[in-house]
Length: 393
Image (tube, rainbow, N blue to C red; front, side, top):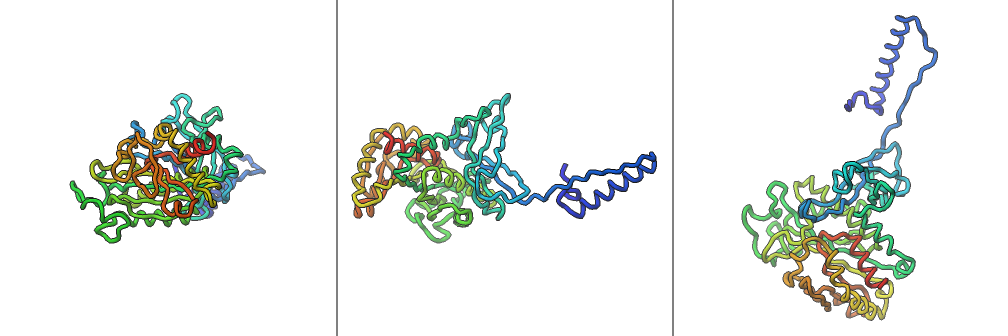
């Protein structure tokens, strides 16, 4: 039971409690005639920092959870001092894996190991958000720990290529009470697509306050968020993370997703990464991933880009199998997508699997855009597959 009056960092209450204990002890001594010459008083330092440990349960979009429930979990740990921003300064922690689908009940403790620490923009300094990897009780990376799999491919050869990533995270806002797209008429549909992409005005932009609050939070947290925009379907938005390195991509996408869901609590809005939240003539929701290496980013880099695309064409099935749950609902060949069973690339072609932006073609160097990942894709997995196919095959 928690009683604020006698909380150990309430100085006045602590003094009062100590005085009461001393008075009781004195009365007991008088009654028994026994005197005690030594007393022990324990004083606990004030707790000054909250650290939100965040991890993924690896079940984004899986049938057992459904498309609406997200994969991120978190819980708060307090500290008596400001622990700073070095992940090594934060201790490992554990959680009940049987309650997250990550362990059996008879051996349910999973380990959280901090890997990235940022400012908590909601609670404010000195409080922090702590991104964690998940480990099994025997100390090995948990099967849901896709960050560990990415670490394995980050060889010296790969690091020398300096791979950069930028992920365009699309999402759809749902009304918490009804489950319908936020801002849509009750039991009906808005006007057909067309006026909403990058639209301005109450008739075109649904849910801007949450999108703006999320942008502000990511900036305050120090995440590399490049921008936001309203998307083609009303109630659908996008933000961009990058350019960043491979591990940083996954860390920052997960942390930004956590912030989006957490702020959604305050707005009564449920953000979903469902790749096709509304059936019919409406755009799906993706996570287009921009990718480059140092050789692609210098004059003459177009040849390197084209060579990478050739390699990607040969591993299409492998990528598609890990590019998100329910992606077949989105990759139909319509609504700015290429059919899921087809691989093609083109310049400025949003109906392709891999797009070469027009400015890149005109300069002759830059980056490529992989348009296949669904919005619910694991960002560590995207980075790992692009590196594996283009740099290690």
